[in-house]
Amino acid sequence: MSASAFGSISFDIGYSWKDMNKISMVRKTHAEKPFVKCSMKSTNHNSQKTVNIGVLGASGYTGSEVLRLLANHPQFGVTVLTADRKAGQPIASVFPHLSTQNLPDLVSIKDANFSDVDAVFCCLPHGTTQEIIKGLPKNLKIVDLSADFRLRDISEYEEWYGQPHSAPDLQKEVVYGLTEISREEIKNARLVANPGCYPTSIQLPLVPLIKAKLIETRNIIIDSKSAVSGAGRSAKESLLFTEVTEGIYSYGVTRHRHVPEIEQGLSDAARTKITISFTPHLIPMTRGMQSTIYVEMGPGVGIEDLYQHLKLSYEDEEFVVLLEKGIVPRTHSVKGTNYCLINVLPDRIPGRAIIISVIDNLVKGASGQALQNLNAMMGFSENLGLQYQPLFP
Ligand SMILES: NC(=O)C1=CN([C@@H]2O[C@H](COP(=O)(O)OP(=O)(O)OC[C@H]3O[C@@H](n4cnc5c(N)ncnc54)[C@H](OP(=O)(O)O)[C@@H]3O)[C@@H](O)[C@H]2O)C=CC1
Ligand SMILES: CC(=O)N[C@@H](CCC(=O)OP(=O)(O)O)C(=O)O
Image 1 (cartoon, rainbow, N blue to C red):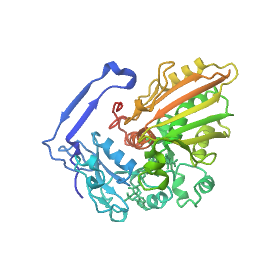
Image 2: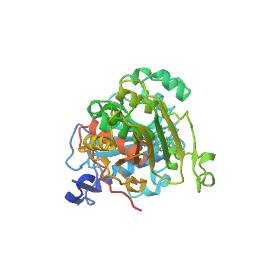
Image 3: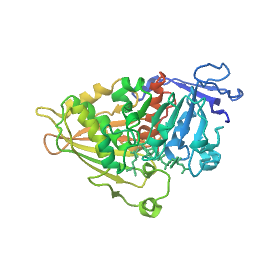
Image 4: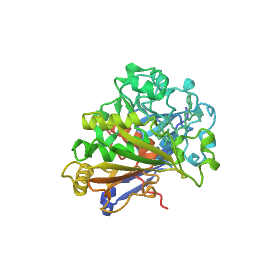
């Protein structure tokens, strides 16, 4: 297996969005030091990297996004990359933007050697992932980006995904990885089901409000919009440039497979079954997601209560940010970052509020949150490898 040299540059950045004045960035260049692979169990003084990572599905969008983020991670070094049709190719021929990293070639999962791998990001299509994870060594820590382990109720998985669950025993040990909400369980987990992009953008604002009983659990209406990268890299007619550009379309109306995942999280928060109206849309941009959520406030509750509660809930969080009052979140402001920006606005209909939340579907909606989770599972600071400012415009 080739070793990675992408430890050549590391960043120690001590800032948060909320504390912009305290930015301190120290850039260390170690280009002259050869990378020497080492295992988690033995510290190698020649390398800063202490954990060996495998990325399954590295030739896809979320896999490549994991690799982009890991380039600035001081502890995680990549030793295994897998693909399906693209197995055998150098990653740089699949993703030229990764050429500057000295990464291993893509291999098929059956040829991958996991003997000195400590943790994997599983960036594979849902439906194939359960079988693959079942076959991985049991000592690996796993963050699964697919939907295969997100639903606790196996019959619900079978209903919405149209196929039997093939790893019900593993399902029992899974922790659902919405980091800010389930941090303590995530720290002790071996297998984390990383949330879907829509469910992340929706649950982050709603869960605290529902837990505090500040909004009614009925009549929650969610209108979400996703960039095209949300659909992955494999070719589909509906994703051709001609089908997507200069237009917008709704899909999965009333039956999108994220409905049960969102309802599971919101119902847990409410301790009663919540049913939502959810309509996703595809919009012509490469990355980014907005959820606009219409809710009814509880009796005697006003916008200020919602605002103050969200502010309090997330004041210690680096990646979930309640904007100043009246500022409307925009997808541009999170592009390439792990941030979720939220605000709440009064509706014209008395007693109702409009909540807007934006994320980058490939970062907080997928690979960034996955890295945040693995950092937590490994006992590292959650922000390692995730300290990017938005790419604007
Ligand atoms: N895109 C997004 O914004 C988000 C995606 N997700 C989820 O993350 C997962 C990965 O998504 P994404 O990166 O977009 O998908 P892509 O289609 O871009 O990539 C899929 C990857 O899986 C590999 N692969 C496909 N089939 C198999 C198989 N049968 N056995 C082994 N490897 C296989 C592909 O290899 P090859 O290229 O060689 O065919 C590729 O590396 C999916 O479950 C997706 O739903 C979650 C949140 C957001
Ligand atoms: C634009 C688009 O097609 N988006 C995907 C969701 C992406 C995501 O989060 O998917 P997983 O649940 O598979 O992880 C969809 O609607 O199916």
